[in-house]
Amino acid sequence: LVGMDKKSMIPSWKRKEVYFTSVNKEIDVILQVSNFQHRKGGPEDVMLFGPAKNVITYKNQQLAIGLFLFGILMIMSIYHLVLYLYRRKDKSIILFSAVCFLLTLRLITTGEKILIEVFPNINWAFAVRIEYISYKLAVPLFLAFIHSIFPKDIPYRLVKYVGYFALFFVAIVIFTPVSIFSYTPVVYQFFLAIVALYVLIVLVITMLKRREYSWILFGGYFFFFLVVINDILYYNKFLETSFLGPFGLFVMVFTQAFVLSKKTSIAFNEVERLTVQLDNYSRELEETVKQRTNEIVGQKEKIEKQKEEIESQADNLKIANEQLIEMDKFKESMTNMMVHDLKNPLSTIIGFSTAEMSGKYLNYIHQSGKQMLQLVSNILDVQKYEKTEMKLNKIKEFLHDIANSAFNQVKHQLVKKDIEFQNLIPKDHVVNVDEEIIKRVFMNIFSNAIKYISQTGIIKTASELIVEEKNEYFRITIYNSGESIPADKIDTIFESYGQVNPIKSGISYSTGIGLAFCKLAIQSHNGKIGAESDAEQGVTIWFTLEG
Image 1 (cartoon, helix red, strand yellow):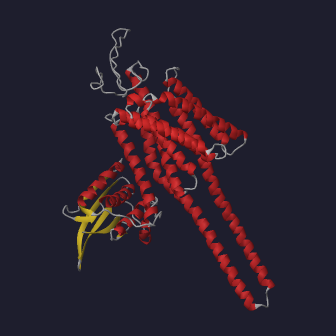
Image 2 (spheres, rainbow, N blue to C red; image 1 turned 135 degrees about the horizontal axis):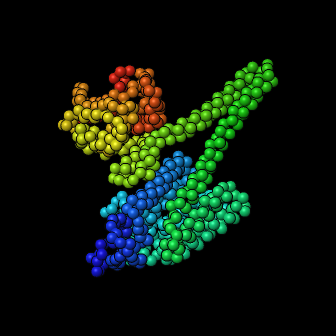
Image 3 (cartoon, rainbow, N blue to C red; image 1 turned 180 degrees about the horizontal axis):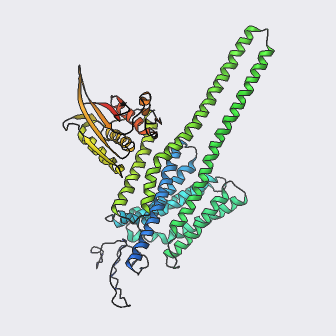
């Protein structure tokens, strides 16, 4: 909003489309601009003129590209974060995750301003701070990532000094108004150029030394380096090209991810090599046992004692070998199951990112992201609470309301399905529980039910008060008319990463991690959980809670 002073104006960088009809070939454009907030005034970018359809198509294409890159970077960040939680020895993984996250923030606050498109009422100064902070923190974190790959070629002391310098500028952004910290890029761009040139020189040196992965990292980084130079010149109006940052990010992130993937695959290959080597040692040990047995014939007591020792060693080696094989199988199974569970929400994000943007598609993308977050939370919580006790914050809550709230959180999964939901829980049933934990129990069970009802069906939940001697508790049932489970496999659905095929369709029950979390949550509330199923009446999952 244009104003005569700082108090009367409202700063904004939201991009707008103006529709008008030209009477003749001449167009008079009058811009009213006021600037009391930022070092740069006037339009942030060039204005585009043309038929409305062409302009809207161009804007939607730019938004689609931005959302696609946003999805790729966010997935990279989350994936490497989870990978680091399972393998914390390699710090390059968490550094790469942090760089991807900062690049994601930078992406949504520049170019088409996706953050402002999604949240039009967001505070302008807050959005500008996100843009500047992500830009400044990405420099030391990326240098730290390159240091983790080539620790002998970049001094750790230099990484610390670069980090302190960047934090100084971040503090300026946090504690000063926009009118002051908007001047920081003038200095920080020189600092960025020096660091970028230094990293380029280091990568050239690593190539000359024939360091592993150096040529891959150099290729992606050199392309990104040229893009950064272009964007700096374009940002300061020295070039009239365009903002190519997203394309440079995509190429660089792809090469970095390729290097980390290669390192991970090498680690897995090493596990397989050690497994084969251990098997060879086991065979050699058996041959040694035979030779020793033939050599000590006649010394019965000594033979028996040595035989027991050798068999004990052989058993230990066999157990170790079996454990390594099981770990390798678990690794492959876990990878397949995670890919299976993440495939649908990722397909939704990528699919809708190429469509014309609307609140409906943004909501689908948002809900799919929440579904991915729920899967990651289940994996982390099961890993955590299988070893430690779950801490609860119990309060009195209405069971009916918890079930309704949980179903509202997952009903976006009902796309192209006609499923009726019936909440038959009496409205006066009150339980003493941790509301968020029990809500997640309902959400996981509802999600499984939706997944295995083919097209049409029903999900029904109910509860009854059970009185046994001096104890009172509620028995809650959740029925769905989907695929049944074999009777001899009914109890395995609550095991971590357990898979069970339904009787009819043969579709696997995903990772099983959601129901494993349900079991831990109910047991922490001193309750019990189980399931019932037959070939005709679907599946009923029940659990108990104290009143």
